[in-house]
Length: 110
Length: 267
Image (cartoon, rainbow over all chains, first blue to last red; front, top):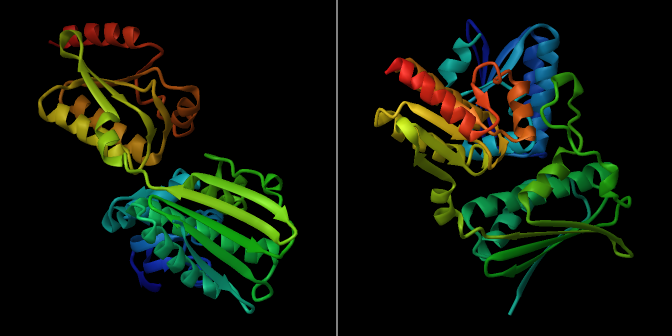
C-alpha cells in the first residue's frame, strides 16, 4: 500500500494505492490521524488505485470520518473500484460517506 | 476426485500473515475454477475470518495457530478454518445495522456480516479441536445470461415505457438498469415508469442511476416515475430524502393513468 498526501486549498487529498487489509489498515488510519491532528478537516480519500479493502480499512475510514465530523469537517471518497464499492455497500457504509466519481468532483465539493 | 490443499499458519502469527492467507485463498479459488468475482469474495471472507480470529478468539497477535484447509472441486471451493482460541458464538455478534447514522455505527460485526454475504454457506462449530468455521463458495456461472434478464422493458399506452428491474440494485447490477434507461432516453422515449416490485435492495449506486435518469427525462420534457416499491427499499428512499424527489405510486395502474394524463397535457 502506498499513501500520498497533498494539501490542496479546499481539502487534504489522500491517495491510496494497493491493498488495504488488517495488516496495513492501521498505517492508513495513522496517516489520516496525523493529518487530522495537524488540523485537516476536509479530507478526500482517493480510492481509484485500491483494488482490495477489507473491514479493517473500512473501520479506519469510519473512525477518521467521525473525528472530522465532530469538528464540522467531512471525509469524502472518490473513484472507488467496483469491488471496493461493493464492499462499502455490503457493509452498509455507502450511505455514510459521500462518494464521488472523480477526484475533481470530490475536492470541488468542499 | 477431490483435491485437498492445506495451509497451516503456525506459531507466531499476526496481521502480517493476512496477505499470505488471502493469496492462498485466491489460489485455491482459482484452482477450483471459480469466476473472478467469486475468487475475490473468497479472499475477502477468509481475510475477515482470520482477522476476527486474531482479534477476538486469540485477543492479540502472535499467540495462536490458525489452520486453513481448502477442499477444491471444479466450480466449488470450501474453506475450513480452525483455531484454538476462545469459543466463538456467532449469535453473540449483533448484525451491523444498515443505514444508521454515523453516531450509531458500530464497526464490530462487519467482518462476520461480510463473510455471510460473500460466501454461499457459512457455518461455525465448536469442537474438541477448537473453533471450526466452514465456508463454501460456488461459481455463479449463470452470471452472464441472467444479467440480460434482470431488466425488462415493456411499452404501454401512450408510449409510456415500463422498466422492471429485478433483485438487488447495487454497484454490480445498477449499470444494467442504467443502460436500459439511457437507451430509452436516447430514443426520445422520455416517459418512463420504473416498476420496483421485484427490487429487494437499492444501494447509493442504484439511487444515483435513478436520479440521473429522472433528471435527464425531466430536463427534456418527460418524466420518470416509480411504483410499487417494497417497504424495505422504500425506507432507504426515505432515509436519503428521495421520496421528496420522485413521484411514487402504490400500483402500476395508478402510475400509468396519472402519467398518461400528465403526458396528454404536455403533448
